[in-house]
Length: 593
Image 1 (cartoon, rainbow, N blue to C red):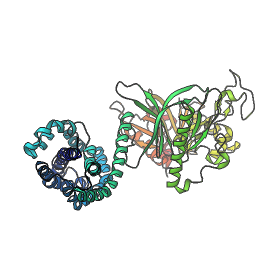
Image 2: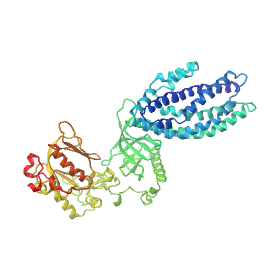
Image 3: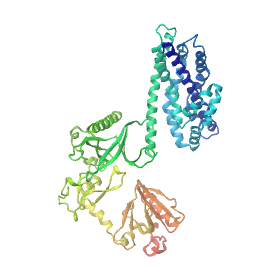
Image 4: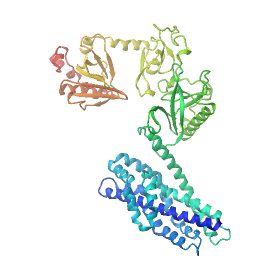
């Protein structure tokens, strides 16, 4: 095959790909853009959004369909007498500014498509309808007449398959690098004394400059495509599809259990701002995972650990959780540590306030949680088999009367007496967790005498608390999705931000207490059977209550809506249900008692 024949082959490929490209431009301009603008003009969504989404696609479509493609077709018909394409492609130069505008707007366009697909069911429906329709493709073919008849089957398969709108919108970004690649190949085959040499060389110089901008957008789109794949693998439940997110590394790993070092199969997705710790789940089609924990890169620390029984281990310590992981080999471990540390370093460079977060003196030792970080960072748990006595009172453990417990704040192994405290931990969404005595005092600031006083309130008889309360009455109560049960509920005057629940009005000890501050109140009835119900939620804690009548419900809501904001009622006496009238469930004023 001669160089002249090779040049003809490259020119033919240019024409063939240009036909397919113009077809996709027509699909974007006359189908996607046109359909969405029709709905926008009806007021379904802003026309300005659609215009920003598709930028100057109509101008690009017009240039290629009405100028460049006809020129290339004519030249191929005259190839015998005029074997050249450099002069035609050089005419492309003034129009590259259109591509510059399109590429510059590309990230914003991708974000708009994502936002409006989530925000508008009609927008999403139109996009999905076009993506799954062969009719749309046939209309594109007819728009340019008989010339597309031979490539219609190709177009149906490649253009109108199940490709997303984002993939179609990437076409103009990819086209300029495609011209650059074909021109480079063309110049390699073109004799240096060819009349087309200077024009082809000049065209390549101009197009290469534009291609560098397109390649950057292509890399972003490829990353976005990968994000969509991961999004699907995670059951479409994690909000990770964002141009600012970047997948750094993914892979299978083993996690060592905190208590007994048994290894469990897990899967990690490392992004530039977060580590997703996942559990594999059964799937007939492709890999699927459930996210167990999201560990932020902010404040994350990595330490290489040494375990004689389990080699290739390292520790990831984040504010949300600390994980001890085992890689498949020493090389795999080094690659994970390198990827994680590089991601942390890059994150710290973007966030200068965190550059000094890792102290050098702790680089080569297991990570301990400082007093300032107690409750804010997940601790590394000391394993059960690493201690034989309580790390607080020094009493030896046994299987019956002194078993092992972990403090959720410092990770130490302690006995039941030393862990019989609870504190709200920031890293666990503010929920109450079992902590040791020392951590309790540091986190809460309570002294021993204050703690004894606070514990004594739980022991006060219900009648005594009820007689000096803001409000009290029987309510039906349900925690999360458990069964409903009747409870005597009291909000004492001395602790007007805490709800006490007793089994009966004369009980000597409360069954449970709910600190109301920060809870969200929902007064929507749970069902037709319980028309006077309401719900309190905070993080994963859900408490449902139901009164016997609407008047009683509103009186409870009046107090609770203040308590959740840290306020108390100015005139609480009109809200308390007298013990003598408890069975009638009517509220009695103190002045009437």
